[in-house]
Amino acid sequence: MTTTYISYQQISGNIGKSIERISQKPDVARETEYYLSRIGEIKSVDEFMADTRLYNYALKAHGLEDMAYAKALIRKVLTEGVSSEDAFANQLSDSRYAGLAETLNFEAFGEAATSFTKAQQGVVDMYMRQSLEEEAGEDNTGVRLALYFERNASKITSGYDILADDALAEVARVALDLPDEIAASDIDKQAQYLEKRLSIEEFQDPEYVGKFLERFTAMWELKNPSQNYDPLAVFGSSAGHGISADLLISINSLKLGGS
Image 1 (cartoon, helix red, strand yellow):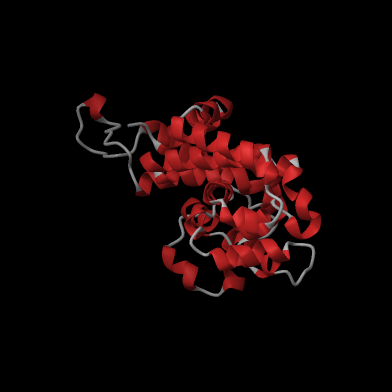
Image 2: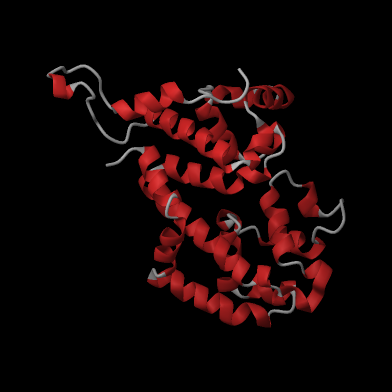
């Protein structure tokens, strides 16, 4: 098995080919073909909710697959849309619901909501990325978390944005070597701490995000070693287990903004 960092780099560095491979899987290709052939014909929230395959496809694309059972909640999200500050989706801390309402914006565009590219190919693109991340997670949860953070990093504008998303918060805690128990502490203090330790504004910079994820994957590997490798084995020593020499170098060389 390869390390978390190497696995992440192999996927991220060839994201186009990785997604193309996913798109050719029979089950993915079948559901995608159905979605594209039917979504443009949908004219209302009721019609969308009534087609289980379309409904499940769109929810998975937005990372809401586990909430497919909550149809009353999803209906309220789609019915109220996002135009009003008081809309249900805008009141939820999880931005994925607002994302769904923006993609299938029946509240704003009515019968034309599914005619836009974002409701058709846009959903397919998100579905492919989501499927890729899920597949990566089957082998290594750390790789899935890294890919997810990479995809959402540019949306982060404050420590609260990180804390509002369990996956982003997990990546931050691991990268900063924080105990899980910190999640139970005062939310304002957590946000202030993250903003002190991280250069939040630099999450708009792919290079910074790459450095940050190098640190995360290195720390993840320390806590969840994916292979038993003895860096001193070539010298006949039995010391050292589970951490490769290049991983140790990566950890020592990585620096984040703040202190």
